[in-house]
Length: 381
Image (cartoon, rainbow, N blue to C red; front, top):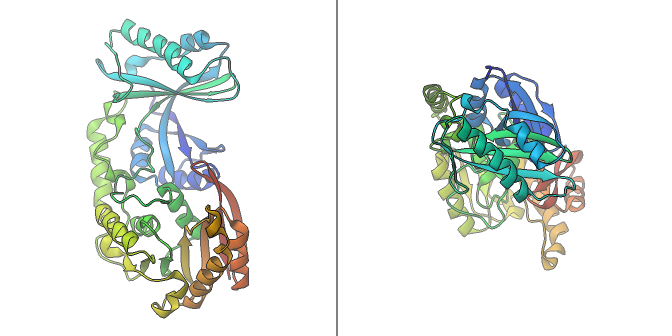
C-alpha cells in the first residue's frame, strides 16, 4: 500500500465538526465531515498522531475498500480482492464486525458469517494461516454497510478512544470523555479560571487538566492494535509514544482548574480517577453545594464553567430542575463566570436559568449521549 491512505474516524453524533477541527490541528489535513464520522486522507504517520492525541474521536479505521454491492456473496467477492499480504501478519487471529444502516434482507450476523468466510478463504489462499477469534482478535475488520454501499476497514485502536483507561471509579451518570473534551474545546478556554460546579466522577476537570498540561490520552493504553499490522512499524509507534510522553508539562501553571461536587463519595471517586490520570496535583478539589459556591471561592471576571448537571430523568427531580439550574448559574455568575458550557436534556430550563442571570444564548446543538438526546448549550455575557 502507498503511504497516502484514507481513514474513517468515528465521532459523537452532533460533534463531528468539533472532531474535524481537532483532527486538522493534529494532522494538518482537512477532513470530510459526516454525521457521526469524518474521513481524512493522510500518511501512515498520521495514524500514530491520531491515536495518541485524539481527544474527541472514538475509532480510527483504515479504509481498505468501498463501493456498491448486490448481495452478500457479491460483497464477499469484492472485499476478497484486497491485497491482504500487505497488512495481515501470518498466523494472526481476526474477526469481522458489521455495522449496518438501512433496510436489508440480511442481518449483521449474516454479513459477518458470509463475508467473513470469504475473507478467511482469501487469507488461507495467500498462505497467511488465519484464525478466527471473536473475543480477542489481533486484527478486527469493520464492515460499514449503508443501504447498497459498503466501506471495508480495519480497526487501528480496538475499543473506542473515549475509553481513556484512567477511570477507576465509575460514576453512575458519567459523561463520555470525548464529549467532555469537545465541550472544553468549544468553550475556547485558554488561561481563564476553569470550574465544573457539579463534577461527579471528575471527567470534565480531568480532561481539562489533560488538555492544559498536554497529556496525550492515547498514553493511557499500553498498546494499540495497529502495531500488529504489517503496514505499521513498531519502532515508529514507540517513538511517537515516547514523544507524546515527553510532551507533558510537569510544572503547575497558575491557572485554577476547580472540581466541585456536593457528594463526598463522588469527590473521593474523582480523586481516584485524577490520581490514575496523573493530573491530581493540577486540580483543586472542593466539596460544596453548587448553589453556594460564592461562599467558598473567588474566581474573577472572565472565568469559564463547563458542566454536566443532573437532567431530571426521574419525574420527582424534574420539578426541581428550574430552581436548581437558576441557583447554580447565579452562584457561578457571582463568582465571575462569563461563559457557561453545559450539556443537558432539559435545554429550556438551562437557557432560562442563564438568561435570568445575564448570560445570553450563543449556540446550542443536539448531541447523542449514548441513546439519550441531549443539547450542548453555550451561554455568555
